[in-house]
Image (cartoon, rainbow, N blue to C red; front, side):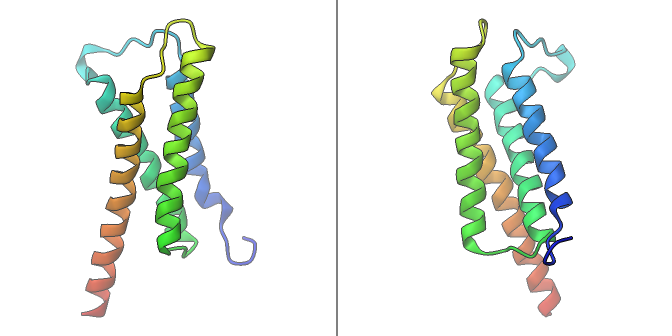
Length: 128
């Protein structure tokens, strides 16, 4: 812990981001039929989980300012854009799509919004 900050709190977000990179750049990923969701649904879920993990690290480090919510959404969307660009230019069987980026951004927003809602409810319950 340096200056009251726990950098280990960011490890889950880094692991989720690494997992997203792996599945995003994997040539021809085959999903079992038992977990057959649409591609856009997977994008939404993965980036929502990334948003939850990143915001959880901010909560652990007591960084709950509006700028951190915005930073989380913007950085995750930029990361999604990077993954789409890498899919387009660095893989043979994947293509970057704007619809995927929209799903990434929506997922990031959902993950961040869930943490914001949790913080609001927690503070309201603590004040009662």
